[in-house]
Length: 323
Ligand code: UFG
Image (cartoon, rainbow, N blue to C red; front, side, top):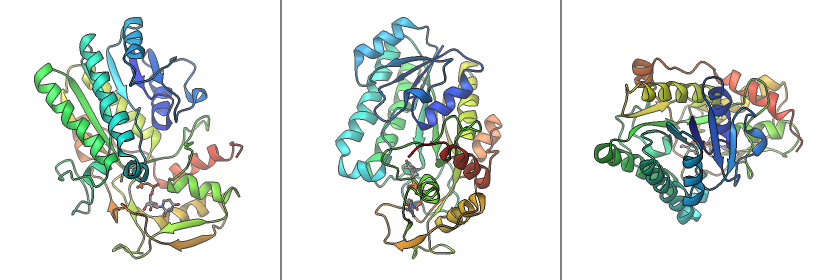
């Protein structure tokens, strides 16, 4: 059985929907940001907190867990600057608790959700796993700290793990049953689509004077279902004992500017957006684009869905929501 911590969240719930096809799954989530109804009915759901050792012990006692996939984290850069304690507590301290309970129950396989925010402001156009990490906010630092803890645990205790550094997760399940639902929403694609549905007056572009082709920030958008398939490949290689300590970037390898994303949303929906240029948002690097060559070479994974598909799936889901 596979334990998915944070399996009611955006990325976790998409992974669970794929994973239940081949594995028995138990989800542990405190529903602080996740949604109970997003968890596939074929998975067992336990409401509980990663930071609560009793909740963890109860799950490990109740189910024969052979691997843990960890999606339960706070992930807003701005919030992490205002409230770093929340990030170090929920993202670092709680993960240590989880690893401690795994050790007690002799569970050795771990997949960890990390982020492009570990790279900070890179000085290369295409980021690969050898690009130096230098996070510029507590969120990115909290994820990098866990990566370092994992490396030490691997050497000392024989933990087998894979770290997946996501670039910009976006899109929704092709069934439109689950999608991206944050409160508050800060991400570009849902904000634009909510605007096009009449839920917001306008879209603000945070900065148009960056050193990029059109002056707006460039990001690498990756479909949440492509992320899910990477997790399943990583899990299978861990379970076969083929990998013990790896870090992989997950992106499309293509960069799109904020303006290009808005134009693609207009194209997919056939609706024109009301766009205003605004000040830069603090902490935004100009350009974050991944090389995912390493995971292609080693596990045969590559992103299959382009920006238009991402936005089409997201749009199908957003149209079903009652705002
Ligand atoms: N943006 C706007 N207007 C908006 C919202 C976003 O112009 O209303 C811009 C941002 O300034 C940025 C781009 O759109 O340039 C993408 O912003 P998102 O908030 O969608 O995503 P981020 O790149 O800021 O964040 C994502 C993840 C983080 C992770 C980060 C790594 O959500 O968890 O990538 O850099 F830390």
